[in-house]
Length: 105
Length: 476
Image (cartoon, rainbow over all chains, first blue to last red; front, side, top):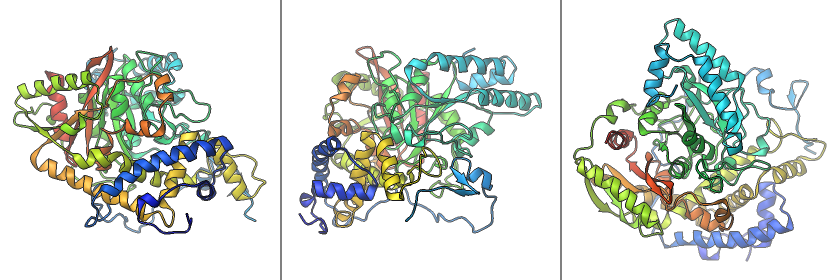
């Protein structure tokens, strides 16, 4: 199938090997050949189970992203004590007061 | 010294009948002696002794501490300042939080002593405690080394069942991770309403589903801990400012005229017949105490719950785990390569198979082109499930099912399960978790000499009804 296609039909959804590579690239994961074979098989079974949701009548239903209504979640924009630099760096590999990371370019 | 319950223990400490420092040494020794059970991710050691000394000083100064000297274990995905927190994963090895989770801070303020962090499935990704991180051995059942404790709060339940000391475990549930192992190990699991207890300081699995709760020997003990940790927290935008009632009063309030619906469609899905009989004996006991017992059905929840839960949980997990990449905290290696190569190498080597599977499924469910058909559809079905529960609670104060369909399985049995069969084990627990409803598992006897549990679910913020039921059963 066209991996760029948009679908609302669950029966059209499948995780092909090509799509699995694309997903892994997005998720920053590299699978072994064994993992790839296992996941392709497992994932098809799991997606099959997910397809049962197409039987639910959701035509007049809004999505519920939270289980309870949330009040305004922003606190007052007032200054509060913050971390010291020492604390902020205490779990990191730090160089000259900065967190060390891999090369960006 | 061991007393009937937490309250009596704390009273004995307040009266000076228990030497806190000696008691702390004893229980720390006990945790080390249980090392072969794999219940602990790390030990508080000298930090616990320092806490005991501090509490003794506060007591000597005349301070009243409602949890004075009570030993507490904390699931490894909840942050305790200065004690390694890995959420059961190698990728977080070496991470020492610089702050306490709000629930932990409240317990410390009340005089409790954190003695250890408990083992779990990596990030909570499991129902049996067997999906442990790279190089980590799974917790074994307190009564049978060939069987699992359940998951994902495996260490919390196993240790609570094993220890002879008064103790409470802080645990966490996303889809059933408190009541599941509580049922398998024969202890009380209590998961409050979403928002009742601050989530600040949790290493997230799925932010719209994660809840901090307790695993204790009794519902009575659970009420004391919830009283301490419940309440609004400005550090957690999803915590609720709903009034926190007196749970201790609820324990003694009785259950006369309470209406409990027995979820009929939960019984026809492969639940062990002997477990059904044990649950039936419990509901008959409640009936004799004046409870009105009637059948009820939750067809949408039972049919769509598993798929809805896993789609939403995995989608959220795939975003929450994106931050774990081998810099800032946890595992950090030679960074002389490009970021893409480095992040991929770290994540591929340090997540176990199940974590990778869940990240892949969750990433897929959120991808452009599939989001509407998977993630959004699941969120809409969640709304249908919420509506189904709301309708049921118009007629009933609580709903009842067995907690798990079977007793603790053997490791060999779990190893043969496909992912779908593993996910299906959560059929009875995902409903209340998807709906953010408070639920409680309490022991209801044994089958094949192994414990099983009965689960009660109440309406949002009605934890009192659960404590009424727990109190009535424990006092009977």
